[in-house]
Amino acid sequence: MWHWTHQPPLRCQISEFFSSLLDDKIELNQWMNETLEAMARATFKSWFVDFDPVRAKAKGGQPPCMDVATAALFPDSFEGSPFGKIPKGWRIGKLAEIASLSRNSVNPSAFPSEVFHHYSIPAFDEGRWPKQDSGAQIKSNKSLIQRNSVLLSKLNPRFPRVWMPSLSAGSRSIASTEFLVTSAREPFDPKYLFGLFTSQNFFNVFATLVTGTSGSHQRVRAEFLHEMDVVIPDEECVASFSRAVGPLYASVAENLKESRTLSAIRDALLPKLISGEIRTSTVAPAEHGPVLPITEQPGTHHASENFKIAVLISTLVRTLATVQFPLGRKRYNKLVYLVHRKAAQQEQIGERFMKKAAGPYSPWMRYQGPEGIAIKNGYVKRLNGSKGSGFVSGNNIGQIDKYISRYGFTDPLNWVVNTFRYRTNDDLELLTTVDFAVLDLLASGKPITTASVRELIASEPNWAPKLERAIFSEEKIAKALKELDQYFGLKQV
Image 1 (cartoon, rainbow, N blue to C red):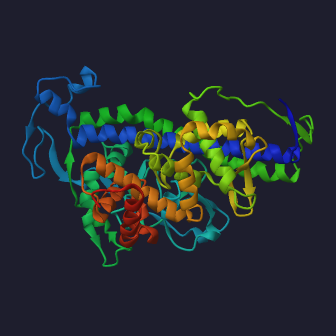
Image 2: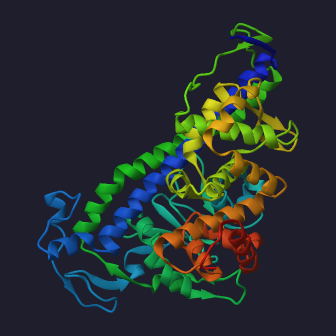
Image 3: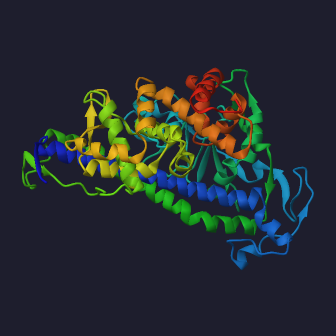
């Protein structure tokens, strides 16, 4: 059936579509890079922390997922060291043997019209995307970043911040002086340094080297980093590791390059599209247009999981969103998480949600169906409201009524809406993050306490910076645990 509805001016429709398309691709690239880097870190941990290839050979076996030539580079036995047993032939040395520190600096304000790629602590915490700032905007000296550098934050090292910059030709890159700018000494390279600096064993020691009494402003002095004891592996194993993870980091660099290009295109063209400076007359004008039939409309109770969650998202949007206050993606993620939790569907939480910077977040809902189905079917639509962007009810929102009762989430959905309608985004982030940590603790049989939750949050690279925020204070986490116990019965609290 066709429905004719009033549509915004064509140039506004195109601008919204254009912006959304580019933003989606930029976020997808970021998600892909996180996955690629996690794969590289897992390889480093297996080879140089857990010594898996050596353990397999010591038992007379072949290291899994490793070719014969690479396996031959690793010894088949261990020897003693101050660190305990390490692969035979490897040794303990100082970090200064594998990395040097750059002390080159620049005063950007002396170049007021030059645009710098600025690697700062806030930029890292907001998604590891350097800001483009003119020299006039930067009021203090910064460290110059050379090619093949790895940045390691010396500020509050209990919250790991490690950055491998992707430098752009023609623009100078600078870093906050809160970062130590390191360069690998041969035969080591930035990929090995990044693996070392992001390993939990490294940070367990690095975080103990702080000076200063203020919990929020503790720092590690550069000379302390140089004096750290580390395992020095065989050179051929290091070279083999770099070859193995090289394609992963090459993909990361390409994704970053593409995202920068897309961001520049968006920022340059979007204002011109909206203002009409770039005309859309080559597209057939239409102030009215058909709303297409829905793309997935199950006729049975056995609807796909994608469609079920699309209906759930749409119901939340209809209930909670207004034109002034659209329902944002991060907020609906937390609410969907809580619906699953109330419905005792921990399996779906483990499969669908990831530990992202904003708390539990499901890329699956955005990239693999539910959100797209809700939009294509006209249940919801994107909107930039006066208080932010998000989703509001679409022209076909009434069609979801026939599905809601079928899918078994009516009661938990009503509970979530009534309980959390007026809670702030920070409150929801705290509750869902703490609850996600609780599920991990329960699965591993560990006690659920304020300390154990904080320890788990600190161990997750995307979550650790949360502990610097007031909303994640020890008192707030303890309060969240008590509230969650009332909702879900956390037996160990």
